[in-house]
Amino acid sequence: MRHTFFCIDGHTAGNPVRLVAGGAPLLRGASMSERRQDFLARFDWIRTGLCFEPRGHDMMSGGFLYPPTRADTDIGILFIETSGCLPMCGHGTIGIVTFGLEHGLIQPATPGRLRVEVPAGVIDIAYTVEQGRVTSVRIVNVPAYLAASGIEIEVPDFGPLTVDVAYGGNYYAIVEPQGAYRGLDALGAAQIVALSGAIRRLVADKFVPVHPLDATIRGVSHVLWADKPRGDGADGRNAVFYGDKAIDRSPCGTGTSARLAHLAAKGRLKPGDSFVHESYIGSRFVGKVEGAANLAGQPAIIPSITGSAIATGFNTIWIDREDAFWEGFQV
Ligand code: PYC
Image (cartoon, rainbow, N blue to C red; front, top):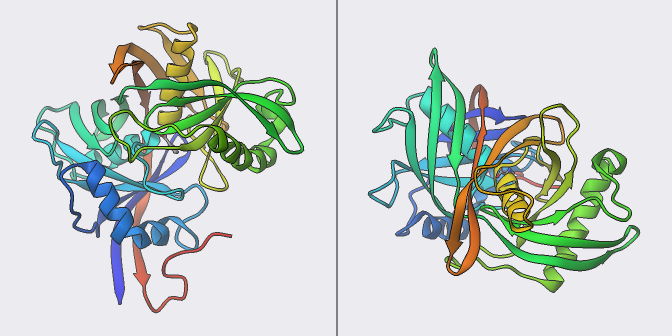
């Protein structure tokens, strides 16, 4: 049996986005969070088939558009990625909204604005269009907060690290330069990948964050290595590790949100401050602490992230049960 998926492929600040415009399964659930659980239980083969090799690769990421479950939103998005179905994905949202608007899949009630239901909650989008191209997408994200500070771990063959955990739509272990970590260029991509999986496991042995409003969002999924910027006009640089082998090519929307909450909680940013974040490859998002918030008793912030995406082409993908690798594979 052959399943056909009509996709618009592209990238946000260098990281891949595959908008699956045709072929989304019908999902059960009274919210995008419940639909995420239903997708994981019944349709995870679609994610692995489209994101893993041979149809995808270690960084592959994307999502589907759905009618929202809430009357106060315009669209729903379900994210897929090599590591699973993320509650929220910033670079994915920028790409999906850009490609959806440019190809008439999204019809906004108010031009320039969208309210989007994602599994992590509701986000507000403002976008600009010039000559039929979406040139900028600003996301006012779900509340972000610092979940834990000063977790001490001993990383084999590297040494001790003190790590903080912050939420920006996913939970991030944040590592600032210290001890044997002397910055991203000194570390290099191969070591970032080799160490990050161990750091994620070591942090999980000591602390498992659970979202105060949605217990299905739990556990550190990403590691954000923070550093000073390389280019003029930026405030920081990062390498965000996800899945088993990926370094985000974009500055990572949820990672930037978590970093803003982290810096705000440490008194290094305040409401109204902007933070230009560089990715490992030098692409940029503009982050901003929009304001203070309260997340079920936790001090939090409302972060925003602004970036842009480019479509690279249409891609009709088959997942054929006759293919030995119909579900995809990872090495
Ligand atoms: O942009 O939020 C993001 C993201 C998550 C994983 C990769 N990118």
